[in-house]
Image 1 (tube, helix red, strand yellow):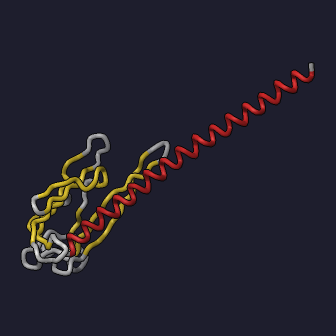
Image 2 (cartoon, rainbow, N blue to C red):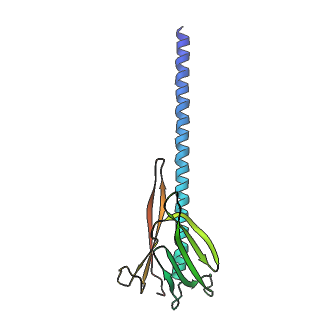
Length: 171
C-alpha cells in the first residue's frame, strides 16, 4: 500500500515540476516578445529622428521655411544625396489615430507622400525657438522635434518623450 502512495506522491511532484516549467516558458516567451517590440519601436524612432534631422539640416538659406505650426511644417531643402536638387518637404502630424489618441506622422518630398510612423507623435511635434532660446513664430533659429515612444508592459502601454533639437546651418 505504501508503494502506491509513494508512486502517487512522485507523480504529483513530477506533474508540479512540469507545470512550473511550462509557466516559466510562457513568462520567458512573453518577456521576449515585449522586449522585441520595444526594440523595434526604438529602431523606428531612431530612423524617423535621423530622417527629420537630415531634412532640417538641408533647409535652403533664402527660401527657408514656407509654413509652420506645432504639427505641420513645410520648407524647401536639398532632397537628394548630392545636394543638387531642391524640393519642397512637408511633415504633417495632423491625423489622429482614434485607438490611441496619438498622431501619425507623414512626410512628403518630391511629390511622394508616405507615412513615417504610426503613433509616435503627440499633440505637438514641432516647437520653434529664436536665437535667445525663446519660443517664437518668426526668425526661427532652433527647431525642437518631439516624438513619443510606446513603452509596453504586460499591464499598460505608456509613452516616453524623445526630443531632438536641430539648429539648421542655414537659418
